[in-house]
Image (tube, rainbow, N blue to C red):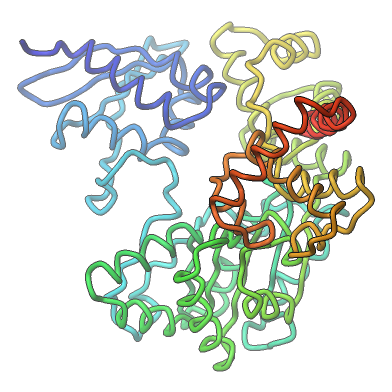
Length: 469
């Protein structure tokens, strides 16, 4: 029995939903409507409520949409947008096809595809830097919380051969602009020094490439490629924690680049001192350059970011709405931008001007984002305070009774409130094996059954941790 085009589109929506967060799905994908599928012409037509919707989908989700359609409808299907226009009914716009190299799996992370390791080691023009050209210094708004990293980044872009800031290690919580900043550095550097071989990628992608090189017996090509880079930018370096073989390869690439005067730029969600599970010889090298923290944006920076975003998108949002958003959304730049997009989307769908009452209604009733996962570092910090022991002792191997209890509690709470595997928890806390971790968890559970005071302490720690998300 042949599946109808409408059911195929419903399957596409399921894939979209699994690849974006719930708020993005409801804001940007729910308003899309299936309109027509021409079997002979192999054309899928979907409708969007406005030109803004079409432009936003193409700018942020084009790869995800195309790759999903390829999977469900077939690779030769063209996508047509039927865009509603207030004065003229609607217009049809054909979406550009996704480059063949990207036709691997649905993903909306365009800037993090794998470079070709066999690209010629020579002219910089032969290398795809994987940089996002839309993330520049001109739209990276400066404030107190990011002034130092931004200034250092500009200095590196202008003089990449100086070694005072090598490596540059940028750390801070998710959503504060680390990826934007390093892309801005790389983009500006390429403008000023087009002869430089610049490469941006995530630590996860580096690990995937390393694993593939071992599997396909191309490790020498892998090393040769990375040792040819002039400016290496690796995002989320903490994802290498616990990956000993990947760290080994990166250590030798790092040494080669540094010894030959090449620039290395790294980002992380934590400082090197909190990266338990990373080899000491790597940590000492991370600390040997410049450590620059990106903090959560202060209120004035939040207002400046909102005004810049509104101006860039050609929107009209009153100042009191900007004040309200900046006072109520404080965690990240990404969250601020998401609120602006949601407000405009709802205003288009409901045909209402964005005023303070409308903004309050939308923000207060919008689907709540999933609570941020409690980190292992935060667990160890709170346990160390509760039991008056040093954090490094919990991470270490001391057998003092009070430290052993604090360590076992940290393991127990990590197993409950993080997504880390037992093996990784053990690796990061005291370098314990899987069996020891399970024993610690069982010990705490058994003690809580008979020790009322311990159970009360665990409950107190649990409440503290939940309130710090």
